[in-house]
Image (tube, rainbow, N blue to C red; front, side, top):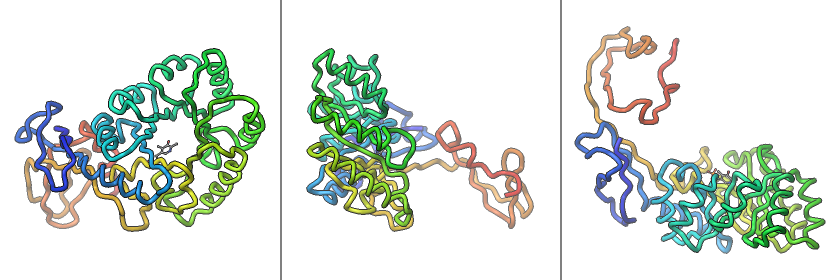
Amino acid sequence: MARQPQAQPSPSPVEPVTTAAGPPAFEAGGILTINLDAIHSNYRTVAGRVLPGECAAVVKADAYGCGIDQVTATLNRAGCRTFFVAHLAEARRVRAISPESTIYVLNGFSSALGPGFAETSARPVINSSVELAEWDHFVTSTGWTGGAALHVDTGMNRLGLTVEEAAAVAMRIETENHGIALLMSHLACADRPNHPLNDTQIRQFRELRSLFRGIPSSLANSSGVFLDSSTYCNLVRPGIALYGGNPIPSRPNPMRPVVELKSRILQVRIVPKGATVGYGGTWTAKRPSRIATIAIGYADGIPRAAAATEGV
Ligand SMILES: *Cc1c(COP(=O)(O)O)cnc(C)c1O
């Protein structure tokens, strides 16, 4: 499949330009277009909404598959100055494109990563007491002042210190220099506005912030931004909304679509009622049907599990 990032953001639709990443358009079975102009505009939408708070951008997982280099350059032009990635390797890519930005690495810290964080001037997101101990050791032994985020779990139950552990850290923080530059937590159900966990997490985080007075804080992912302004704090961390995903699926999507996939129709045939189609004959025509076969499949990222299953 040809992947065709548009070179420059533009107010009008731009004819896709074939890049070296794939075959020319007339040969391609499918064409995936990433609209960088829409990413630019989605960033501006979120950033405007959370003012005077700051809007970061999550560009992990190759910017959700949209291409970390092109997306970072676009967001940089849109005014984004703080990026979140999963891995140090991604932080290096962002650093090369955005020399002045603040970069947080979500996957945490271990001693072995210390030199890499220092070279990249990236900040780890500290996810446990063990990581915090290793970070403290790194900071005191090297004098590194690059900063880190402290991630506290308020209900996601994936990563982060417990609230109790964080409270103990808060007691020490006034006397010791941890270099903690950001207090953060992650919402589990913000895409469902009526879920009771939202209020619980917002309340817990408010209490935590009062323990870490003077340290900037961050709670909202994409859904949080569209859920409630009490999640904005100092910094929001949208990912999926920048790429066109609907932050609150039960409402109309406020974001511009970013990703468009087109595929060539290879053949169209008419099958009678009762005929089966495809591997295993798992789909049966309920009426005379026109069947198009397109030139993309699981090699192009269409999930195999999306195939019709027995009995459907
Ligand atoms: C991935 C991630 C985000 C972005 O979440 P979206 O739902 O894509 O907006 C924010 N914060 C953390 C900690 C994440 O891991």
